[in-house]
Amino acid sequence: MKKSVFFLAIATLLCACSGKKATSENADETSGDSIVTIDVKYATGFSVRDSADIRLVDVGKHEHFALVHSDDTEVPSGYTKVRVPIKNTICMTALQLSNFTVLDAHDVVKGITGTKNLFDKDILQRVKDGKIVKIGMEGEFDTELVLAANPDVIFISPSKRGGYDAIKETKITLVPHLGYKELDPLGQAEWMKFVGMFIGKEREANELFAGIEKRYNDLKEKAVKTERRPTVTSGEMHYGTWHAVGGKNYLAQIFRDAGADYVINDEETSGENLEFEKMYALSANADYWRILNSYPGEFSYEALKASEPRNELFKAFKEKKVIYCNMKQQPYYEIAPVEPDVLLKDFVAIFHPELVESDYTPKYYRLLK
Image (cartoon, rainbow, N blue to C red; front, side, top):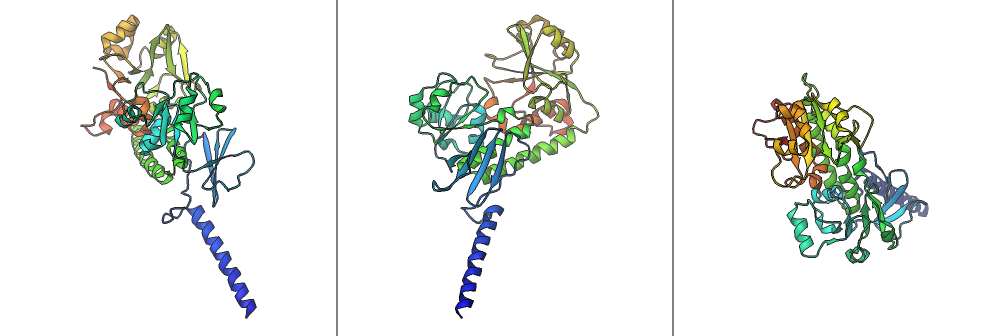
């Protein structure tokens, strides 16, 4: 009798443990304590591994974080422990902020670098009310304001000018956000899942991204099948050089996904500064010309010519096919990183208008009048 009771107890315990593990790994939607699975499909800058009580997040090659729900949880060597969900944080870039905006999590943001080119009324009101502090720009951070924000972690952008040494002395955990390095537009947007893990909004991030992914890929499938593929160039002259995105840049990929061919077809992933003569040789006969700037007032073909008289030599200028977005009028960097499907549709509406509804109103890019 005693043996039967003993074996029954052991069996019950094993079943309970087995059941708990399965619930955690399979992300049982009915359990508020379960780990919601994060499936990284496009982003290359972070990866995720889950177990029952810990989530291991690798960022790039050198940064490793263990997300836990209890301070008592032991983490592997080489991993920085972060108790989640975090309550307070600081964002260093508009791209990072876009993740919090789309996840309806402005209440977690307690500090930003500044409000230049920000349009979001809620963020601006929070700054005005003192709920979000402006800590200054890279290299000139106000350490006292950083501490006043009381962040659990600070999301940083390693590509910026830096100035993190003073912040490191505060012992606040710095978490690199590498969304800006992604070459796939969907990969950049997928960083909302990264932020979602830190703030306890994994499920929301998964659902939002799934919608973006479907809309993007559905339209891309139509656009890439078109027989007519116009050519497009990008950028303009500034201080004697032409800043153009490289052939492997995420914007070049959006052009291709929208059914157009970018005039630069190299392996450069970021931007490149070219002389006018070089860019003219590449772009003189391009069908379209994409420009993004912060022009004060209404930009026009007259203004484009005034900035560089030789601009009138381009085919796209002559045929009035300049594609334009003014960052002083549109929240481009503030929200576009999490709306690649909208960016794609804006371009498709120009390159292949027959593929979108006739009454479509572009959000970011439109033909310059």
